[in-house]
Image 1 (cartoon, one colour):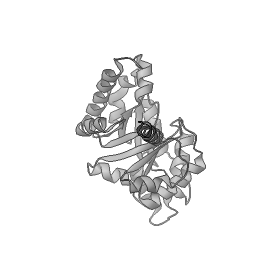
Image 2: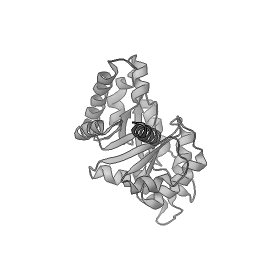
Image 3: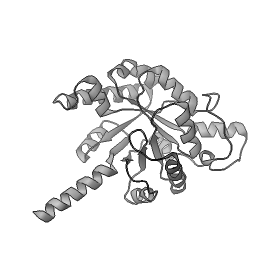
Image 4: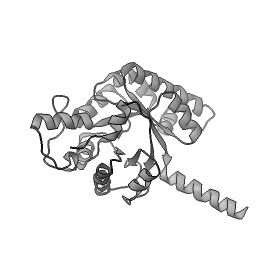
Length: 257
């Protein structure tokens, strides 16, 4: 079976730059992003509409290209995690994780025994249709390749930050900035930026204490550099929707100038 490039990169301390895919369904977007120098693509099926078939097609191509995808499911539960892993997705971006109990459930359903109780399947995209080695070796190898990021998106989640960060099987931490701002009552206010930065720093410190990686969504180059210097290894640079829209807006503005 193939190895997960994101896990290998963060183990080496290498910064990885990706982008959200919210609209494009054509799998050709993956080699396009790789040719542009990106390290990964993050597919959103919580707030966007790709089908499981589209995600499965992208997962197989991602493995063939050695260009990993990360997927955010609508809910981080057994149903979605099992389907995504079996389709060939290595990297899970789990939304709305508020408690250590939720984090433990995610670990349990994303890893085989003895670490968890992930549902067993036969040859699939998740195994690259390979069957070499002993069953024990195959399960252990699969467990090593899965990479789980949990999203803290409420003020209450920060009451359990240390427990979540310390949990074996949780690989990376991040926050959902707009949902968190809404929950904190600062969305759209001057306090939003400083409040979110304070929470981001808390996530970074908790990750350092517990040997975990940090992922961060960034909207411009200055923001990306700021969090890169703070030790963030997984940088999600805006989305393909924003890049296209901003690019065309600027072109139209320049032509009419």
